[in-house]
Image (tube, rainbow, N blue to C red):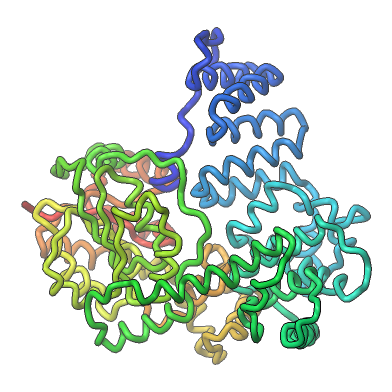
Length: 582
């Protein structure tokens, strides 16, 4: 669980004992409900959670806990609706994909069985009946949690992806008939279209399948030109395979009236991209972009803004940066900034803005300048900017290599997504240090030379096979990799959408570093190493490892020893915190 999730997550409930008594406030109702739940008085717990939700309908923890109780009672559909509502209120919990996936299987066992069948039959594509039995699409098509997940995030498991790939083809095949289409079936196809747009059409496609989609494209284009009627299902099916803006005269679709579910797809695939194109001209040009590597990286992200995300974190209670660091690194010897107002933060390489938005929400008094090379990424970020943050977060186009000329300084710099895509990450770090005020804090990210060995091997495989960074080759490459020992790269979340997979395996510039190189830079520039980001449960094991050896967690030399012994410790990346002297 990351830092944003941790602060937004429910607090621990009371220990078992006598039930709390009170005046019915939200806090007391939650305590009562938790007491009943711990005592296995599930009916009483259900009533208490429902009373709490009558008082506070937006209480994410209560929705989640009620779902847990209903699941224990075997009320799967009701539980699913509660879990979906909890995620809608706190979308950052989607990052705990393993937990969310296990919850989905618990409330919808048919999905687990369909995943197993699709995975075992692959590359054969199963029909809807083969996937779900006689109940067909009705077995899953109206499940609230599944529907929420499909229109909120790409799948992060190969078995889920294969099930959805089979399901998409089955829906395409069924759409060729003239049978009656129910409203739930159309709604499910629309949610599938939203899912495929989110993952940027990463699912494998057969030549026969592609030919059917091409014929459907011709039919839709002719109807748009002639003004003929278009069946909503046909449009939804097409949107599962290609974005609607790929149709000639696609904007004419907006002038027609559609069912609500399909109109949502038009918003996602036509209205929102049109808004992003308009926003490009409103983004300030902060610095020139002259370096050849910077220009190549910019071009990649113009074509594939990274990452594509749907919902910003919710339920965040801002804390002082000092308090956050003290809670995260209780033994670290950093000097408090003492700022709860006007905390100036720079986010270089902000991409599509998710991290910048999180920082503006996370810290008391945060004022954020977010900079990126790519206008496409920045336009996406600006469209997604919540209105309540618009006066505290600014976006601009620029290059780290030229940021020294902007004449500004910052209390904190968060640069976790870009240094590893520079020719020399340490040059970028040096430049940013000049913008950091004395005593300022930096949060940095780098790829590990040791931990990223599987990605390096996959990139060598890609180069040897001659794959290019086109959507067709990326789809084909992913399937080929999964048939080799290199298929382990699917452990990375970035494997499961087009822009993210390109970033993971096809990036035009990737540079990896080591802990000794980090230590050398930190020591050479008089920085204070505060600590590495660690995520549970690995964090507990690492702390125990350091304690058992009598090591200090502020000793980077000991971290090198740890990584040598356990090479996957930093499989995601090094994420570390340092402080500038002064």
